[in-house]
Length: 411
Image (cartoon, rainbow, N blue to C red):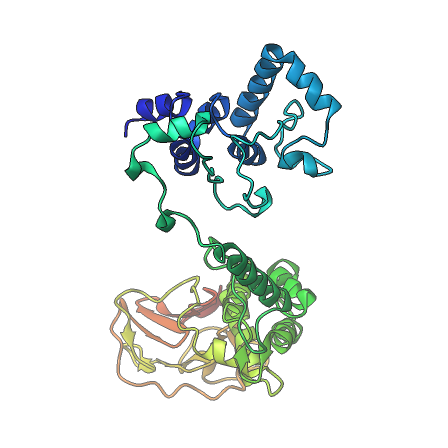
């Protein structure tokens, strides 16, 4: 039915009472018109007043003012006889949303159903009990189509509201006592995916989150302990209490990489993986994290995967290991470095970027020749062969050395 027809029907004083009840229930936008309709029965008016809708309250207030102006004697009688009021007058305080200017209307035998339940128990507009022939209500009912009368199937069963209240109460009690032991916590609904739940000890989580901003980038043991402390309170046995805690760990580790360098973050990760006291959940997270390191100076894109090589002349032999890259030069024209005597000199660079001559280190054995302008890579190291010497560096830090017959340098 078009909206204009609904508005006209809601405002028409000849509209059957049961139709007004259905309109009030199914079409909230016409409720102000129903509140202003002179034929609306008192129980429905009281139900509308309980809704707390400003437009409905305004219509009710206008109605009262109009009634008082038209029937001053009735208003005086109502004030003098408070016992002859409707169900609203039985409440010590007005219900929420009841306009102050809406006083109780007097009950009339021809319009108020005597067997109507309390308004507070209604989940929908109250139906009207039509009296026997003779009153205005019966005349309106006679004009109404038989099909317009509400059937039992359109009304909510009386047991539905109490049952609904019981279900809601059960859910609230279950929520108040929390999930069963061992259940993981979840964000609340619409959350940014990816928000981690707070650990059992908020201080441990806060310390880990703040670590990238508080680290000295020089104490691997102390920083690894912050991760371990978080794992102790946020995991049980070998599993996280909240799976999102794994993301908290990796976020802090990547933060260390950005605050210090990838080599330092790797050192902290290795300390945790190798540590006997590291919680199992932390160790499992780190060992399965995949490639999270971001090298500062990656190997050339065309670098060969090789662990050893020699220069085209065979004078420089190099090896790329797990923790260091070394090159040993046999014949040289530069002076002996400190702590080194005559003979071959070995230069070493670690994953952390420390580079320089180390005459105590074993010489590199070398391997197949590497042509000039070619490069190799293995682990966290890369080397490049050129006419002016061989350069090797840590891909994590970009630091390394260059060695040639004429001399060596570090960077």
